[in-house]
Length: 420
Image (cartoon, rainbow, N blue to C red; front, top):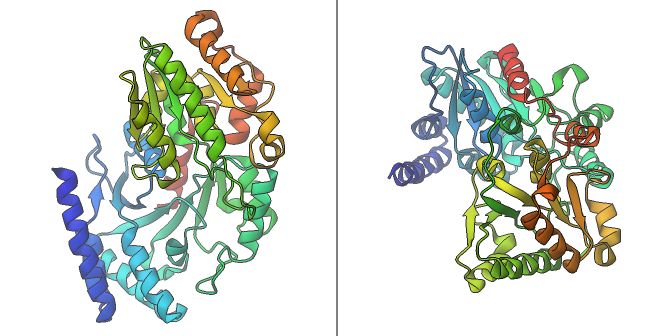
């Protein structure tokens, strides 16, 4: 019921926002934004500083982790649907007028500041077209701008492509190109991304902090873990290929892996399998979703979107490919199986995936037969299911999600507090 009411409000405010643009009344757009703001519930009252969060999956989970650990003593977090900024962006993009765009945005936040005293805005990616304008907010408004960069899985090839896109203003069209960061601070998960953006002078080194993946804190701080199910993160055909111009995808790899897992599930009805789909409406994995539905097994369940932490903590082991779930699994001290069909994809694996070799807890399936053998071993032999502590895993965690100690939420909180 709550979700229905919110969606109803959102649709009304979208109309108000568009009307404000047509009539050139930024007050109306600011009113639309204020009406659809939602607070993140907290046990701590009497907070002083208000932080506006531009809502995005996973990014929100990082912020909620701060609230869960009650680190938000002087902070109040409110959520805003990113659709409103998109409406404004698309309106002025059609007019191709940056000056009017910046002027309108500044007026909108001038009125918001009057009614709702925002001290800081948080976005989750330096490359979001519709949010970059917030780097140019009038300093007299005294609203700081922080980007908590949530992407972290970059091999050398992908990182170089992102680097080039930042140098070029990271947009193919000429509207509102920015090749330098004008906000107040950027937090990143790992050193790789920090080193890249500072090496091209996109941002001053003092304005970037490596904090690690906040939502991974819970894996380090949870002692008792159940082993209820096998957790398979469906393989998205374009994972890691965003910057690839070739006509290639992981579609066949995903389908062949899923076919093997489903057949194994059919042979082992006593085992529970959960298939995690990244988005509620994930068009990339439609064919795989259809395969699960057609198999119609009583021991197979599908979960759409949401925070995977509980699912990972309660799993026997994880199956994932080119996903942060691999490293979240390591943080949770779980075995991780990666379908690594080298004979079919050796070149692409080197070009588009992260090096996860030499870990005792990451098992690379060489082909479908080997994958079935690994599933059988992990499900039938408790000794092979045991996590083995190793320095290599700490290196992988540090290098990729920047969190091997469970203190990322504290590091991010310190950055936010220093800004407000």
